[in-house]
Image (tube, helix red, strand yellow):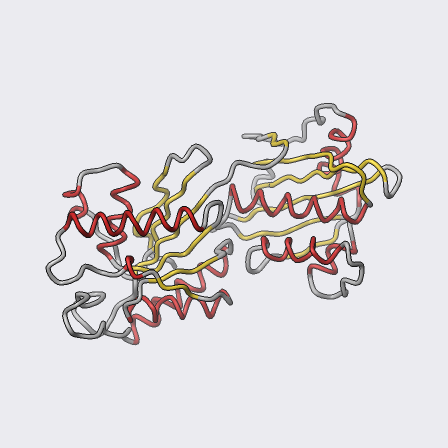
Length: 324
């Protein structure tokens, strides 16, 4: 069963405009447990600006803590909910950049729900506690509460999608061999589309990059169409060149990884590649010797997830998971 979370967000101003703050929390939809929360004073602002700042903070919590979850946003601001759902136009110039930022952060398939104020009491308590300079009253049931003041720790997530089944005997021929990488079979296209649906349901992917080989490009294009994203090509993510040593491949893959972490720091990136590069990337994260790459199996159209926290320490979250 996929993880479902609820963002509860609120913002308020004492004076409108006046001293303002927002509160946002991330709740497990199944248990009601609060997974993370954030509150901040934002100086002098209007109620609407504070409401949008609360929404943005809530969506950032999703991005940093549960990037693969299905998301419902609940707010008592009819204006913000209707504008984000696309049912009301955004006319005020101060609202437009905030709405654009919220739309950029919002995962695919977000449910936008208006709730009456009494059902948004937890977020309201957070913002008022921030304005008063006090600790918020505990919200039960609560486990693993993370009180976050200011910016959350940046997390970079690389979701590695192996290319799907091709018409060749392997995911792609060697670069420099003079041949063209084989295309996807009907089975391969079905695998790629299944992965695309899985990713679309969970949301969170902000960017897609791919090996330039045909099998990876076709897989990436099918996913990109479902997520409405563009695909960037990274040459170093391709399978080995004929005669390329294992050490040379490891060096090339490490170069690709360093580039991805520099360019996409703090974001969730889908990396479409092949079995060997994915095994090499996992090896780097595990700080393992080169020979372990031959002891890993990476299934076609499977997902492997790597994450880097603010301390720069990487974690392997999943290996060769085939989407259902």
